[in-house]
Image 1 (tube, helix red, strand yellow):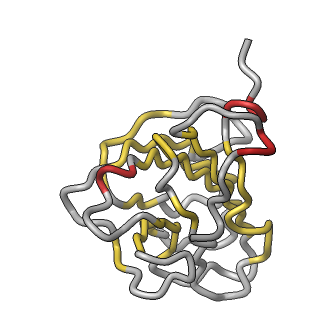
Image 2: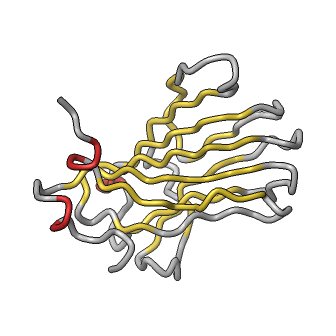
Length: 162
């Protein structure tokens, strides 16, 4: 039996919010003690802008020195571009970013991030958009980390501090 609370490190990356016509960047989380990190974006799109979601990498959880993930560091990506009609996540072509399309629907996008692909000196990631999210749209981001070392929930290292 799987117990996600005991087997995953669950962290809120972006509190659910109205887009407010701003570029959205999640909190930065450390992956130095993780095998994998899954970034799950919930996006209720209220405008017809084709938003591109990027994996950002940084040497610090403050985000200082952040740059887009290198083009050779491909992430597995899944998406559901209309959650009202299906609960199926479709695997997309591996990439460092994902364009979610122009459909005015509720979407889910999942990035699988391998810490080994971040490059030397980078052990922190975030998710960011390249265009402003409209005030008519809602977005939230959750991170689910697979710990490198087994241990009780209370003893798992933090991913929000260096």
